[in-house]
Length: 337
Image (cartoon, rainbow, N blue to C red; front, side):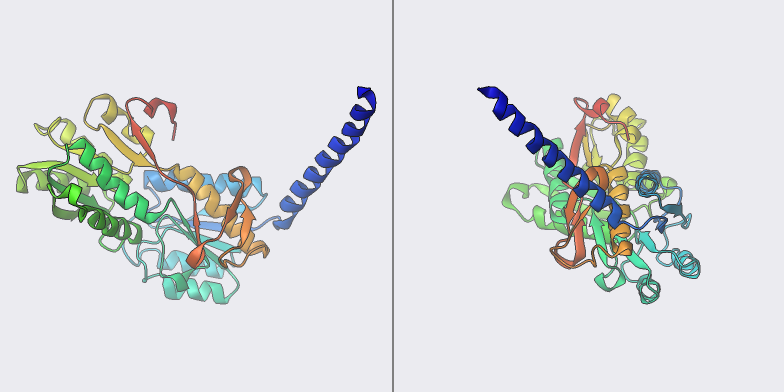
């Protein structure tokens, strides 16, 4: 009795598998081969940016494109301009940039787009007219509010704290800080007091010195939130060898490999981040789809992003990677990036 059913099932299953293979082949074929895609990080030597750029290069290799990373050694507002101009001259198919300033690079990115070069921002956005798509780590509001929620747990819901940011013009930092300040307005944080926003300019030594200055200026400080991978590591490094260890909570955004030693020695109890490699990977696929003409950056469009699957363009051309992870002593050894 069951043989006829099996014989029917087999061709149906084979047809379904064939259809799936055809669909996958069609999706792969939609991307042009040999696309030239350049990544422009905030800083060429920033550990976080290196991981993100490596993710982008891995994606470009998968799609048989030509990838390159070029950028400044400092995070100045206009330090990326000369690199953008060079990439325009080289006639890249797409530029993927983490902007040091929301406005300084816009005229040059607009020039690139006017010459047919597709522009994707990731990690740190420009003004919307400077790009077609912004690949965001996670929803900016949830990142900012989440930082305050985590800090509150670490300091017992009360006390003075400071924010150690990157540069004063960094779009992502300023957006997250805005949402931190919004979260602080809730009544449950009435006993938390933000005393200072300091800027380490995404420079390790300056962030280290800023941490020292915060502790000297605010002897009752209970916590430091550094929503920058350079800042959180520098703050932890200073505090681990100071009398403030165990008294001042350090949290923010950092990579597990960078922060593991500080978690192991008790300097840092918990911090957050997404996988920056996946962020770069997603940005590369967004750029490739733009350059291949499968999407234009309009809200509601969707595209295939390799191992990350199908992604949809949201409001104002935003594509979101996903929610951040909280890392602590219980789970940090499960991650390697």
